[in-house]
Length: 117
Image (cartoon, rainbow, N blue to C red; front, side, top):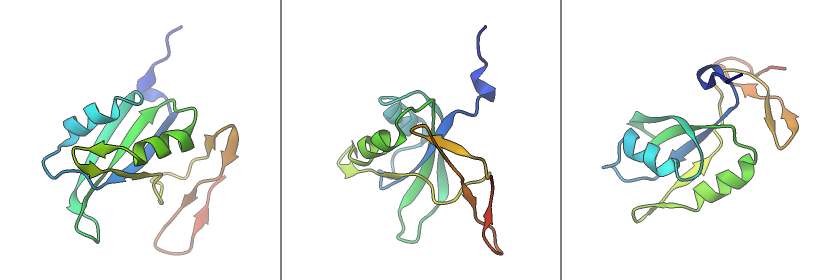
């Protein structure tokens, strides 16, 4: 039976910044496809507090998240070193598995911190 990947929750999201202003989502998608199958790339219209552009990339079925994070963080887009890490905040509070270990994700809200199980 073929699995429908559009409803599959086995994806990993990374935050990235420090890439050329000339690059748009399609170019960053092509760049990230060198490492794994990409679900989507989002580049914010806003800039971070240091004035740099930033975005998010989602990959399907990553087995070793830490290793991929290190590889992406040491890569260059043109002459600029890309900064990549796992996002600090999650849009949803689901539980994610990294390297076989189950991690409880923290969902930040305006009020007190809420932990999901």
